Length: 452
Image (cartoon, rainbow, N blue to C red; front, side):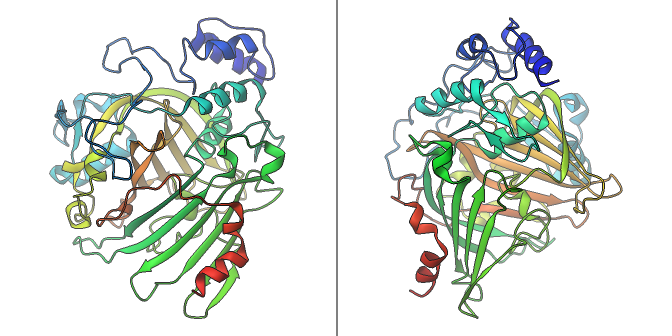
């Protein structure tokens, strides 16, 4: 089955079907740099010309930006081409996800989508592209689909044959090798009032470290430590996560230090449908980063590609002068700060497996073809009704060529509330070279940090 699917997708996207093999044929992998981009996206423009050809993405920072500063808008002269509202959504319905249609209908004039010129800005370092080409030839799903072998650094399947391969492309996409940043989150009430929670994040991506090999990373994708800064009632809380590549063979390891008890405890349930800490039960743990963790609770189907209006190049939201009060509004964020563009996205549907307990019975993910970043998703309840809609507003970072989120939110359509993460209150720029080592993310290191 996989052999025929790979050959068929290669024939459609590459214009030439090589021999049917369990992995992408070498001749097809070479073509990835021609008809396809190095990450497997269609290099050419669409037939209408509304999606341009990919010419390498945003390779250099704009004039006026200096290293160490928050990213500035590389497209300051861009103005909305048009604005989608509840009144005119019928003109654009074929380019809208079900979640965005529902939000336009439910929130009326309060919710609108400003659509800008499409900028295919996603770009990554050349050594990442080299690994993408190697992964295309070597990478394979494990027999249970809950892990990948013979892959390193970045998305393993530039030509995905099924939904599992596509979702692994998101989970393993390149986000640099290490990064430190401060971010605020909130769960506004229906009237827009909110109390922010501020966390320091530290990531060490062993999987993506240059020169790393799969056996050497000890089944670890990344290490993450979060340290709560405010409010005072939560300050000092530390969460430590060791994210594994095969979470069935070696489950995610997580610890949590509570400042009140002054003890670091294992958190075995920090996964799947567990409520994300400080989310007011508006988001599950596996919605962090739009989707994370073992995919074993769902059956995954690759539904193909669509052209959709999705969040992109969100430099207005990322602007260092934009404060939380500028972003947060009742029921949804300030849509005048958003930017939507027409992009080709992979559509992946996840259906809950029989006998599995999860709050979401069905989920639909929209993955940007140029980065494998999930840019939007829909979450359905046990009766099959659309319950929540999630968005990832992304930018291209400059000090390390990475296309990644600057802000994420999950909208609960029943409660008409939302969870938002990525609020900036004068915080420093992301530091993609903080000098971490794997030893900085052990349980004993976390204990030492907590006692300082």
